[in-house]
Length: 298
Length: 318
Image (cartoon, rainbow over the protein chains, first blue to last red):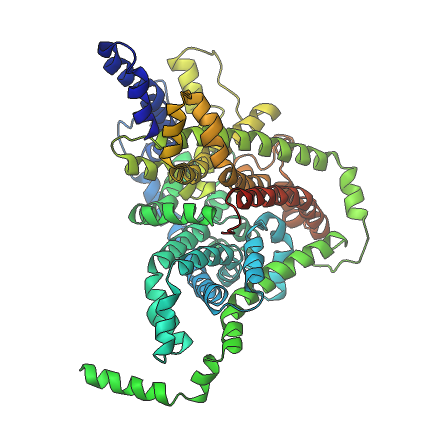
């Protein structure tokens, strides 16, 4: 915005007929060209993934006779191989189960926690909020070794339930922080009115605060879903049997075998594994952007 | 209809049973509300964190309870060239990748802050690398870095004729290190760009108007308005970025698994290799714990960024 204002005023002192050209060419060079480069570079790996997934093997490994950027005879063989010769559908189902389970669990826990911290206001509630925030700064890479022993102690090793219970450790801090921000934006007067009218606290939470915080809940929900779908290190460390693996882990450990990589199948698997989150994302883009920026601004 | 639904609720309000009354008792309600979150975090975060520190001082292996061995694990690490290599590459990886992410991400944010058609669509597309599971995009990079059928090699050799041989991306130490950093930057740009864009949009245009009236050049406007106004949000985003880049695991594990010849091990991948794959839980935990000082440093960095923001805004603390 500022640049659009800036260019005309600055060039206004020059002769008027060069002004329009100069400004447009300048805009082209300074904005559109770099922007196009960014978009091409950011999207190229996905394009390459998609192209590889639908290429027959002969074309895949012969750049001399086929243009690698295009598919001359597209094939569904890789996807068919994936769906019918591997446990891919099973992995998708496990991943979905884990993602939905942990999202539900973290939403429940963080809604209640955010409500208690922001609305029930007790002595020390800011410190509890800060503590939960600090939990977000503890990365999984530090925790996975001791967590593996904890999971074994609980008898949950190799069970998707372990992942459902462990993922909230990074989802709850994020969601709580996001929801505290949302609850803050709801006028407290609404709750006071309800209190005066004789509503109980839980009725207030269910009938007044939660309906108003729906956008926040959606943001937190889709974020949790994406994060648990993408999680890797815990799933790698806690799951051993092929059937219980999640998609990211399974593709890397089950499909990569031997010295000759099946690039077609690998890329088809990556494409299929990315699709659910990509579709989810395209439906809720605005929520993603608002939660991402909201969490940073808080 | 409405009458029938209303009357039982009215009765319930006037004569709440003991359970409803208990739930309306504030201290009890606070405990009930906090219990799930605090419980989960205590059992699966605080306790393992403490356990991890304890494990680092024992010689636990998979299937055998260890005994306390004091600082032995750490002494061993200090004499272990692999650990030093991982520390070096973790710092190098974090430094170069963070610099790249922020330089390019800031640039992208500035570009996206202009007016042009399809802006929201573009913003949505830009975030895609960040949404897609890292391991899956890392696999795409692995394929792009293939020694024989790399598309980049194809471009350089057969299309542009800049080279005569294929680029060996992952075969030797330094190319592999930079290839991983490039993939990390690629994945990190969207997050930085979108977060900084949100910050850019909060800067009041009147500041720029005032500066332009005073005759400030585009560079001066960036240097004296945009940059200082972005400092607080830069500090926060950078802290997150540093923490999660330093402890990165997926990208390296998916593309090189620490190779060639252990030259691309990050502390996290080394910890996994020793702790889970090798079964030496105590030693793995010691490697993980050795990341903590770096993370504390990054968090302090964030704290001072935040403190500065409060100071800039006067006394209000939100």
